[in-house]
Length: 275
Image (cartoon, rainbow, N blue to C red; front, side):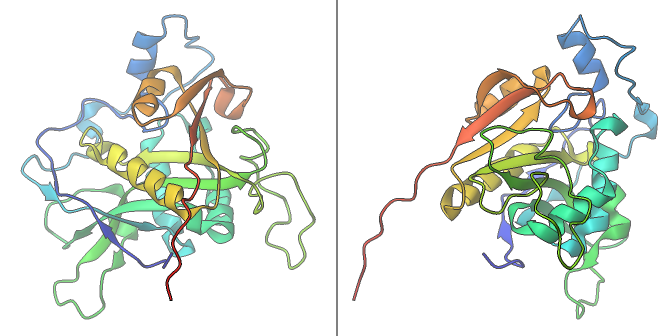
């Protein structure tokens, strides 16, 4: 699959602003407390960004988003996006994890972008890290990351703390074998992060991104399933996309309390040979 291939998706009208900061993988603080009365508020420390301080997308703006695989050149945009989308710092992937995953298995990572002309009114945290669409464009248009899916492979059937880890010597010339992080021969793709910029949430971009990812991985024939972890309020969102809830998981990343979700990929159908 060409790294620079761009897959257009239908325009997404922006007609309203979000009421709270929420990530596609974990719920917003307010949603968590409403959906789970037994939540220990002292155990999870969230930073609630007041609505007046949140970046808003213009109400009359029409996006023309497209998806493409992420590369190491998208590192800074992914870090900025992750920090903006996840209000709980413990649930964010670190810069080192992004550098590892985009270097080792960038073909398993997908971003949703839009083309922006500077000064056109789009106020996104990732605007400063955007890249020129074409150097010959006179209007200086740049490609801006709005959301990402970041993943790796594992030999396990579900997401685990080991699959979310990073080998200490991964970037050395001769790294030692490790059960941490990406396992090239694994048949399970573990989705580590699904995130949409807060100002662009509630517009259907998360659904478009995840469905595009599922479709691409389904047709690639490189794995048997997708696995991820989610908090209770987001479980139903993933179930509507076809994921199966496997119950409370053992992963302790970000303080634990996750549910395991799995999507079984279809086997490649035999293709007729011609000639």
